[in-house]
Amino acid sequence: MATFVIAHGAWSGGWAWKKIRQRLRARGHEVFTPTYTGLGERAHLARLEFGLETHVRDVLGVLEYEDLSDVVLLGHSYGGMVATGAADRAPQRIRRLAYLDAFAPRDGQSVFDLVGAEERARRLEAVKTVGDGWQLPPNPAPDDTSAEDLEWITPHRVPLGVKAFEEPLRLGGAVDKLPKAYIYCTKARPGDVFRQFRERARKEGWQCFDLDASHSPNVTAPDALVEILEAIAARP
Image 1 (cartoon, one colour):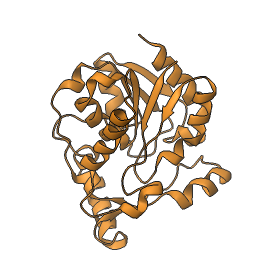
Image 2 (cartoon, rainbow, N blue to C red):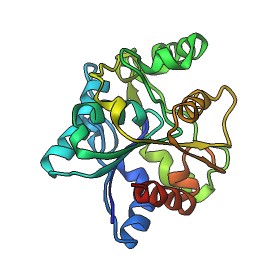
Image 3 (cartoon, rainbow, N blue to C red):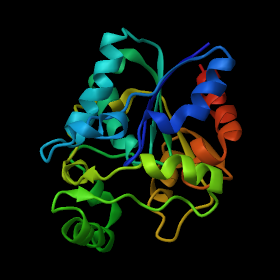
């Protein structure tokens, strides 16, 4: 059986992976879904100065204090930035690094470097107008999210400090040597920023999956996602 650590997306938290935790644990796997500082049940800790580096340390703390090894580390969306940073600093604990419709950055890149100038300008304007000058308001949920799931997730999604998207990720090169997998959600929104990473993954020979789902299959397609996660964990 495998040990999964999940680095969640922006505006979210470990709570959003409830369906996945239940299913993986029922199959005998261990699952950790830490919430970053300033989000979810830790929203009261939000500060202007906390960003990507803080979130990387959050995940590293779980790997260290739970003394985890042979881990499948999954990053979803913005969590791809976090997972990449954590894997680079603790490669000895990672069996495979996986990305779910996620950013797969190189050294020195930030989220804003990867989304393009127009998207960056749109988000920074939102920070000024509705984010109190330092917070990014949440994206809307995918269109195929059920009414029941919207009722569940909407009250729990909170603004994210803009530093998380501005801060460049510093890598030492260890992450480049780890086995990787990429899961691409094919029901993409207009302006899809994740296809670039799917194409990179194929070119570099990563284990690749296309999932017939929108951007948050942990909410909308948990059974299909669990099947893929087990396939990733089963690969030597």
